[in-house]
Amino acid sequence: MKVLVIGGGGREHALVWKISQSPRVAEIFCVPGNAGITGLAKCVDISGEDVDGLLAFALQEKIDLTVVGPEAPLTLGLVDAFEKAGLRVFGPSARAAAIEGSKVLAKDIMAKYGIPTARYAAFDTAPAAEEYIRQLGAPCVVKADGLAAGKGVIVAATEQEAVDAVRLIMSQRAFGSAGDMVVIEECLVGEEVSILAFTDGETVIPMLPAQDHKQIYDGDRGPNTGGMGAYAPAPVCTPELYNFALEKILAPTVKGMASEGRSYRGVLYAGLMVTADGPKVLEYNARFGDPEAQPVLMLLETDLVEIMEAIIDRRLADIEIKWKKGAAVCVVLASGGYPGSYRKGDVISGLGQETAGVMVFHAGTALRDGTVVTSGGRVLGVTALGDDIPSAINQAYAGVRNISFEGMSYRKDIGQKALRKL
Ligand code: AMP
Ligand code: GLY
Image 1 (tube, rainbow, N blue to C red):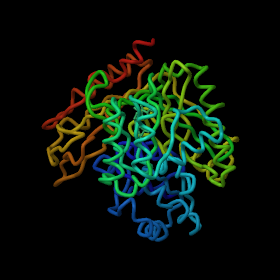
Image 2: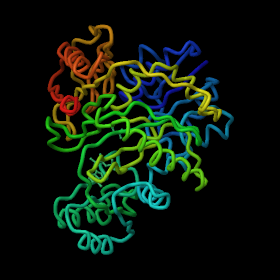
Image 3: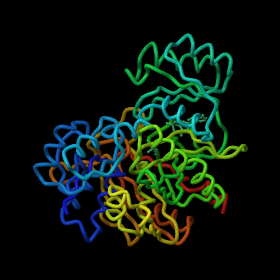
Image 4: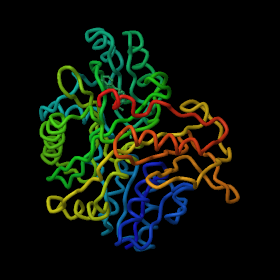
């Protein structure tokens, strides 16, 4: 079969890599892809947000299965448009993906269906939001309702910071119409864990729990990024927590979405904070996480195409999902200056030397006259399998040492929180 993957980051390289191992797949296209993906798929330069252009391409190429990586095409209704045209596509509809596209909707669903989350209120005017901030006190969290490329959440240490965040979002409109509404919520304290699940709208099968590293510097210091590394399985997720996440969070969310006429098919990502008072949902995403997908997909034993097809046909209950033993760790190599402004176009050296069990997933890379150069903030994700977390950490950092480019920066402590638990 012919498969089309939409997106061009490390997550999509991992998706293409895993899909390419399916005996059922003859050809893969990726839009827009990156330098690493070119070895596995034909990369085509169409914007991931040009739904009409993508549909025309998929029809013309007679694509058998389309897989959507990032959130924007999902909330724009790519899945709806493809299904309407009779194409098979993996991911939630626009109404279902709204669980990521609108934080107000996500919070309202959680409140309605009794899913544990931070106390909150939603506002469509700045003065009302500011009044609630004074009532709630600091610290608190201010969230733009809509998609803001991961920048729409401000954890405010003081009431003034929270008020400034509301003004930035609602008055200065830093994120455009994503800031028409804001959610103000209580600040939760604890350790974060990402639990992603496959679901066909009825059956819910969680993947191995993963942990992201959002801040740019070691010890979780500095500004937030798209994610500087991840590992799985995360020991913070005990068997009790896993069962709680499935029974009290993921399953009721999928059931609640169906009752709301928002039947959810695809990957549902629950970002949890493990608090002294139990796990609580920080956010939902309508897709695989990046970089969580890299270690999680390296550990997936089952054919991903089989799983996706079963979800499309609403027969996920018939599938057994198997995982490799051991652990996987992904260390992201970023451009100097990221998540602020950074250089592009620097030559990357040391690629292609990875040992067995190590994959260098490309994110912000491009080809210039046949040479791989940097083209984004997060450049590569060196991902390694190991018998356990310590050995996967060693393998991943051994892989990192082969690679260099001007200004390359990375965290040296990916996985350390797991070591403290083991
Ligand atoms: P989100 O996009 O909602 O996941 O928020 C991004 C990050 O902000 C999360 O991964 C957390 O680190 C942090 N965050 C979000 N909501 C809260 C909260 N209620 N309390 C503490 N931190 C939060
Ligand atoms: N790694 C967090 C995300 O994909 O949203």
